[in-house]
Length: 398
Image 1 (cartoon, rainbow, N blue to C red):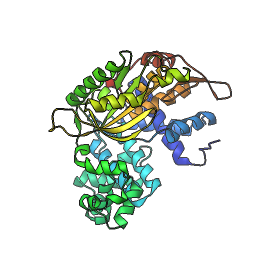
Image 2: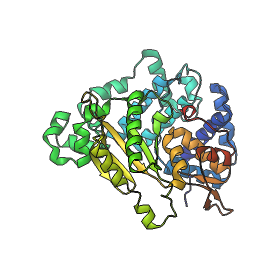
Image 3: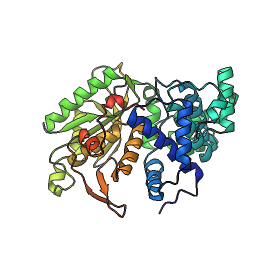
Image 4: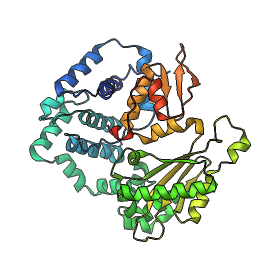
């Protein structure tokens, strides 16, 4: 059993998210003072222990918090420097406490609808202490942060952060490589014997993977995917999720979900075998849309694609997931995002005595255990069961 009352920072973070859920559900614009008042009241309430334990599972066990990135955020520049500091603490210092603290502060600022004018004002917000408030003051007054400037001057820090940008190379591997004297991409190319297949492809296509994918290009890839896959079987359903589905003009990679009406969680084995991700991938390779495979399992493909016939187009990261038909719309909701929107949805589900994940929506029993999965035939069904008005994907960019 998880016990989160031993960690005050966990409870503080959950309170922040509950206030953010209020903003999401009511579409109410809060000032800094109103935000702080709601947080203070929530923090002082004697809340149900089981509710907090379940919230802990939603926020700390299921998935990572992504960087705040909202063009309408008046504090985006503050969020950006906090996330740079967070990346440094994760990749270089390995200080999980500071990493989480910077991310939590960025999340708080990202939820505001007005510009923070000083560190003193920011300090009144949950998740922002004296040290972070001083950094906010320094940035507001000078337009930069000396700590970040110093980090960028340190050769080791720069090298670790650079190598960690290569697809497949995490912070630990990046540090290991730097300690072995490998500090640049050119160095890495000379020591590919130290790399996995995934990391070699990440290095090979580093320049292309760093480039954002224009919406128009993903639309072309989407049309090709659907046309090719439906040649195998016209009953296949194909959806590109992520920021593309949320209407963004650019994306970092392409996330595809596929299902078939005969491919259900309760189908017989022979029916499941008739729907093959391997066959789909092979077909896409023959049509020269998929150029490289990072990994291929029964339900997930990771690889590289490029629009055929135009060698000027960059190579792009492509992930394809084959999901059960009866779990398809929960998967679509989850992989569409945004990350904070998903967390708000899962927390609201718990308030309504349900548990929601990328597979199913289940009502909790009186003992707090998941019951039978609800029958979901569309995203709208999920919102309806949870008593929420449907939100179009373009309205989920929070």
